[in-house]
Length: 631
Image (tube, rainbow, N blue to C red; front, side, top):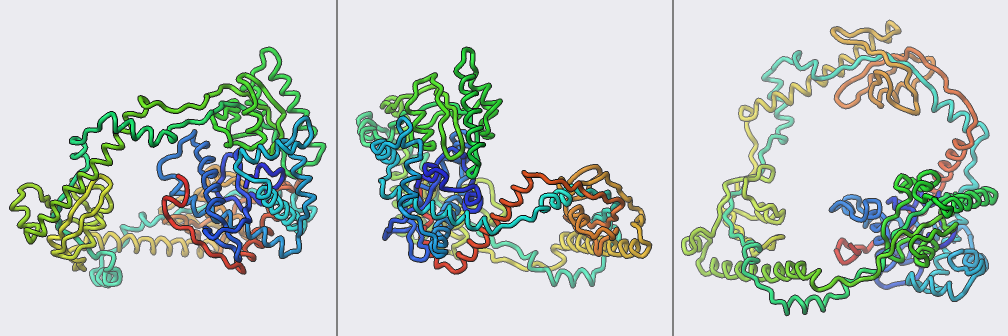
């Protein structure tokens, strides 16, 4: 659904809980689709989430990320973030919220839906709702009035749920002042850092203890399996040299795929955003609109510099420094009200204020790229490359199949190699972690090599760049070495472990001595470091220890100067003393109060969502296939 099309349908609070991936905020999001489908990606208590809804959500999320990366994401970035799973999780949470609202007795009539639609500027002409414009805008976004209204009704229900949950979040009057006092508290520390490396010289070699330690940890030193490999490789690149593609074939392929070379009209625009929070009072909204109108007048005045005004006034941090530049984008990529305005403008025109979910926008259309279809000459070379690779791969398979048949007829790979000298390649024994030069880089090759038993011939395996046939000439199973064979490694690891134990003991002894004398003592050969004043809210500072140490120090009761136990940070141990402590200034701050209120509301909603999820019957049928989600 077009969440951002539905005015005020998603609150900041719900977006915080439900949204996992942050997308550029002027793109539309996805709401709840209640239409049933036999082919679903998930069901929540019997209600299906359709592939259409999932694919739309996935596409829009990826589009948003691409926009953040200037139109092109780093290869594999979407997979690393797990966007497929996170989009599905977001949709499931949205459905849980909707169902939770129904269980709580929240019912939304048709009247609020109609009122919300009538108030949307994108559906208005001359300030009044226009039915034909309503249908046209929805059609442009591939939606029907019934599906849009059903989704909007669901969102209004969710909005009401959020409001009710928020009403239970009570923040005491002095909460902001207490939080400020806590956050601004300062202290000065003295501390000693004890590192294992400083104790390694004190670790004496003990053959008996070393042997016992090795016996306990010997699995760490077990060798990896190794394989001696003979193989046939059929590189696709070798066959590409033999492939010739006629112009007639290229033209036929071009006509077949011509639609894929169509590039829709794109528009290059800038904007200035005057951001408004969802629950902002009317006087603030009016003030923001007035501010937008004043800046609009400056932009339209002779000599007005829209980019400079965007840098000065825009609340869109993502492109403010670029003068509000949004780059080129096609129709349907932006919030509908924003989108409708841009695609009704002429180059050089400045429009606004345009109201969207995020506030008021001033828009300047810089340039228009008309729809084009790339010509045959423009794509001829890329078509040739694709066809050549396709036909070369077929030739490579043909060679691999012929060779495999010949191996079968010869009776073994060795006999085949006598008939076809120089074709069989050999790799001396290697492990997964120590691979020889010349080993094909394709993971499928290594996978197959280590799946074979000694004397076993693989079938024809497909690689990224061709085909191969593998033969495990010898397989060396993992071995448990004797201590003498790995003594140097074992001794180094043993010393490191013993040094860490000595450092921990030294820290405990130092703390015990310090607590007895009620002040931090200087260790033998060590140094006491004294910090400047450290602030709880901003870790770091003069001579500051690691964050873990500061965090523990701030947890100490005011009367305590020394901790109950040393603190480990990384491999080192720390013993500290609080030398000075200053109470933070307790002041009432409206921004802090609002932040605490939002946090309390979020915690309540998160807990409620967790409760709903624990009771829900959720079935996920999304499969990890390339055709499940658009790439």
